[in-house]
Length: 312
Image 1: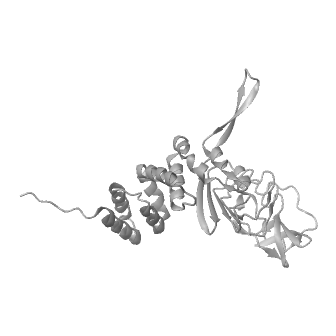
Image 2 (image 1 turned 90 degrees about the vertical axis):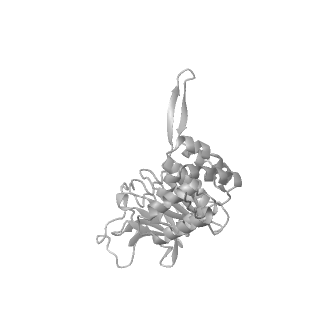
Image 3 (image 1 turned 180 degrees about the horizontal axis):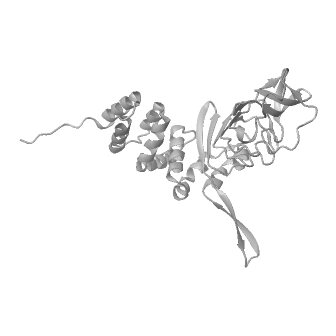
């Protein structure tokens, strides 16, 4: 992968990336200078004109490789040295699915995610909880799977999709805006200084009434598997919901194939005898022997072996 960049004093601004991969990892430094900014339209195919006076990697002929932009971009890793995302950075990146950033980003431009639909946002925190997460998820109305690392703990949150609808109130001669879906309210739990996890958990009944089962199951599952600042009452509501939607939970867990997730949920008393029997039945048809062994052992410990009875 090669880069086109601009030097601004002792700092570097990335203007373009060149290569044949769809995965982009921005370097922390170029020529010993930290990369601190990603220029406007850096990953967009809608850029009208390339910058004059730009530098290119040593020995690189820009005619050798295509520009990595638009639909050719699927994943981007942005290092902790970067503090600014330019206007319309990902404009038109329709296949963008995952972005990794850090809390060190201080400024995000206009329309950063215009014309794209990322599914996963990952952010790492190094000090405190202040970040630009609110600006990032607020710019994306689609369903987001957000992974965070705070205080050396992994946190996973689901932010459902929403859309805004303008309805004319003729008698009052005004236009009123309505938000459909629970996603807008979930995003209001995120602030520049951190996340209100209590408010996030209180929205769960609304998610149940408005969202698809698979979204609600993932939301509850993530809060139980990664219970950062999870209060007892919130935990109980998630456990109760998953017990009633065990078939969908099993479908998700078995696809992920992570035995540690079964172990964590077992400690939270999610299983009942019917559900663990169902899990054993499904797993027995696969090659997942370690998981099958765990489930059978879990069944014995929790529900014991039923004694056979005979009538004479």
